[in-house]
Image (cartoon, rainbow over the protein chains, first blue to last red):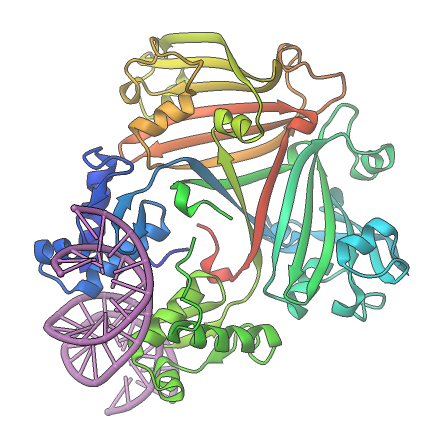
Length: 246
Length: 246
DNA sequence: TAGTGGTCTAGACCACGTA
DNA sequence: ACGTGGTCTAGACCACTAG
């Protein structure tokens, strides 16, 4: 994610020095560390080099910098876990599996009140609704229930969903977006469990995601997986309070 | 997370220009964008300024840079979801709840084979094992089963767990760590469901986390929550393939 | 007022990729 | 051989903070 200084580079030497003092406990959370000019004198490098090194460490959550005041060791108040979500087709391809999709529903219909509110449109305005079951090697992997604002995918009713998912197609037209997501453990409805071939008592993992572009909400989706297929693996890193995820 | 250019600054002007071309679709994923020297000429700024602007956009997932080759619009092949994990006590405090802990187990015992392997120690070497049930307003919220390498928390058998969690205590001694984490939907054992006061059929969300410092594995923990209490909320952002989370 | 970090300049040398 | 991005220098001005 972050640009890492080249090993052996001057930045890396400075960064290693600072991180070393922090992880050894010599510099405690909240402590003020030497100023840029101090480090310039210590290492005999230019100020820009020191600045870059400290800037990287700030982005990585080790430091908090306050202009006019100084550089401080961050208070490690939280963890951030990062999960990489691939498109279902890519995920299956990575495992070497065979992909197949079954389209269970595909409507262009008037938006209900709750949907209109979510998308910031008027009640009754057209909204695209698709339910797709994704298979890996002929076993149901994921049930996707997705709403899309038609203006972002005008040909939504016509597109072929066997080679490219709606997710991926939206990526093509609005590649750079933000969103929020909620993960829950759920039972799922009778119907959903039947579709996912979930044994009685087998819990499901539900991921609900809402994504938007600068022009408005693009899509709202609910993805359901059952049992051992429902597994999210992520990386965790310690962060300082001041750089907490917004 | 990332250092954002000051609005109105030269960096921001360059970054806005580039992002604008990308989100408008004028520059497509995979396209090569103007070189640093081109942008220097276009904007009449120094190369360092252009470099910083493009560097930030790379870290933010918009661009991929290949030394000797050029700068390219990133292929948005994946999403990254970020979840902020607070310490249980802090999480409850944020909601204004009352915290209470029940220590169900607290052992310093020989490590079994699988545990020894996970921690990189010898079989039979001492390992600290704690099981704690965290209550919010006298309702069980989370069941925590944690192993700790004793060298990182030598006084583990003596510490008071009612005011500060083991998580938070480990934070104090080894604040800057990395880890991996797996989220699953599970049923949980009879015993676990009883402790969590989980109604029959109510699924549980399990978070398994392994964290390490440069000196080795610090702790392995399994956190279990039931039903609507088991809810992870995160932010999502689009990223380019080349900056995918490692 | 002195020190801090934030930003920017106008040069420079380097490793690397491509032609 | 040339252009690319990566790194570094030695200055500079600024807004802000603290004593």
